Image 1 (cartoon, rainbow, N blue to C red):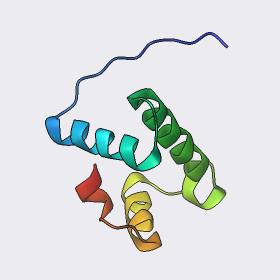
Image 2: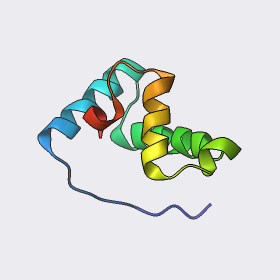
Image 3: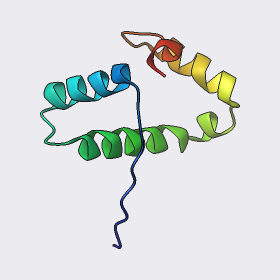
Length: 75
């Protein structure tokens, strides 16, 4: 696999959430957290019923599945 570097800027609140996730999940770096989150989202989005939803339907569906916080407050 030919790996590429991706760099982005984020708000302080997002950085705090990343660091919190690193501690909770015992991840050694931000790349692991982001790669895991993206992989999980892609698995979720690959489901037939989810793939047929538009963005607004997907957000509502995620909220109905249950989470500690509503999707909009996490994005």
